[in-house]
Length: 293
Image (cartoon, rainbow, N blue to C red):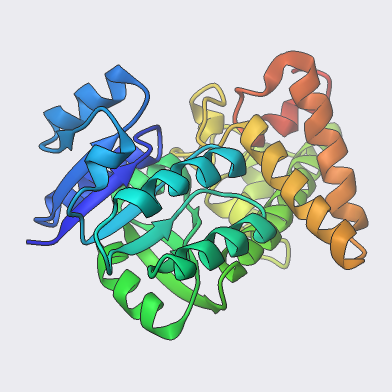
């Protein structure tokens, strides 16, 4: 039986770990939240009181953590406690430079490592349909693919270490831009007397079709599973989108890439967060744009 250590059992990590358990793997977990550990244990996992205890003897170690600083600190503990040859998989969303730095340190300690951030949100984590964007060597990717499959709908090898994070930053910048565009279109349609469902029926089958329209529609009604039909409860919170846009814009600045719409999107989500709506799903931008939120 494959033994997995899962560090970070929050909104994403807990359902991801449950899918590994359902696949017949032994999963050892750690989180600072006692409640998260309780839920993990109830699902059949074994909880521990430290990173070092959780990773002891594990064949692979998966982390799903809030930011780059925590990722660096956790892996400093992992390098000391993990068994030789363990595979390291970081599914946190962090900057490319940190991902490559941690991977380099892992190699120095004799470990193979991949960065494997995800797209799909809590719903995808629960359903086991996440899209994994993986950066790392061919051999590390092949090892990671087997571990990731129970949690994934799609797994893409993006190239060298850090390229998974690069793909995630670009994807989420695009997502932010497209969600604002779809929201503006619905708001304009309403002002012109178009019914939301009617506009959806047109745009979802025309050149304006995109994921933000057909899978995560910001207008209530057309897509029953979208957060817009659950009072814009996340989902994917505005504060998290703002974090990802910050990563993307820092990358654009460091590389000299011209991303004016990305920068404008960050300004819009920053204002939404400043207005006290960081915990609202990012598709709630449709209401922010009209001043309703």
